[in-house]
Amino acid sequence: MISFSSSSFVMTDSPARYIGRLCKHFAHKIPVSFDEQQGRIEFPAGLVTLQAEPEGLRLQLQSADTEALNRLQDIVASHFQRFAWREALTLDWQPV
Image 1 (cartoon, rainbow, N blue to C red):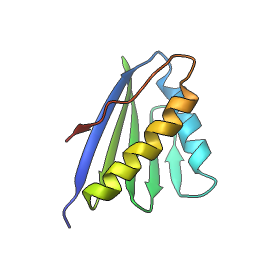
Image 2 (cartoon, rainbow, N blue to C red):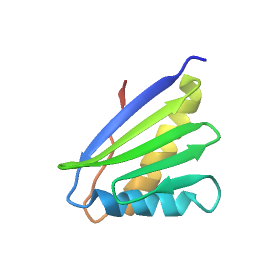
Image 3 (tube, rainbow, N blue to C red):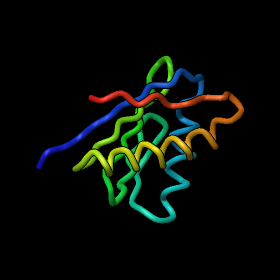
């Protein structure tokens, strides 16, 4: 199975807050697991992993095709931006 991936890093002093908010939001509909250092969100279109790093938050997406990957990027980015409005953070996806 071919896997397509993209990644984004955002500088923030509170990566754990965003991991928790994103995972709790999606947990109502799809499988998630998380703690303060990492998160995993299992969308039908692919997998999202979140990792707290010393300087911020790294988000990694994997999907079986580019169309699904693009949809996943849009979904995650729109929700993240809604939660991060106070810091005016945005995600810039890069192919992996």
